Image (cartoon, rainbow, N blue to C red):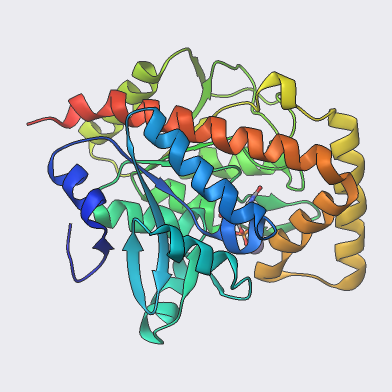
Length: 305
Ligand code: PSU
Ligand code: MN
């Protein structure tokens, strides 16, 4: 860890120094992904789920121009109350830092911060991908997965995205897509698609072995671990699909584009599907945090010295 590049909380720093399991958590989910105060309650519940698995949570953000890992409850609440903050992907990080801004980190931004801090596992809900009808809009998350050695535990990508194209980019970028107790890429709200993962594994030890093998090869790419939403909270695929199609049509009509696309589509889909999508969303976020914690615990011995 380089203290001039990132500032870790004392708890996170002590865990990293002691070779204990740490799981990074993103903050764009808090500022742009969920409405306040659900956003803050969910972020805290994710931290608790990581702890229940025996790992230390490190929520990542830029606060007052400083890249930080491990936030206080008050800092997380503050982020939740500033929804217009800069959404920091790779290209935004230097801007927020140079201008002394407070910004949230996307999957790409969080992977970069985690890697700088020495954190190897990161849990979230959904990654960005290739947008439907806009193959030029490729989330920087996919390219980050191709270049930064952090494992991202998620429920795949929302089907607001073009999932077949998203998988093609991941393949080109050299990213292993590991199905956690599944043969199929999940589509966030729903447990399966007809798109196969690269490998199915049954337990955290197998995920850790794949991450550690990538580390030994020294070829510097991320790993995408996909975990389906728990069965009881799954949304019927057709209901999610109808809402997504409507949201994408409206976004096209209104000319929504660039970094606004994903937050706009997410909030429109959640308006259209109300409680149902929120239940699935919260359930998978907590579950992925738990699995992320278990993977980090299984990974720690691979790096013990
Ligand atoms: N998907 C979700 N919820 C989210 C995001 C994606 O279901 O909150 C956020 C993540 O932070 C992700 C970002 O990294 O959106 C992707 O944005 P873009 O498509 O602009 O790269
Ligand atoms: Mn985009």
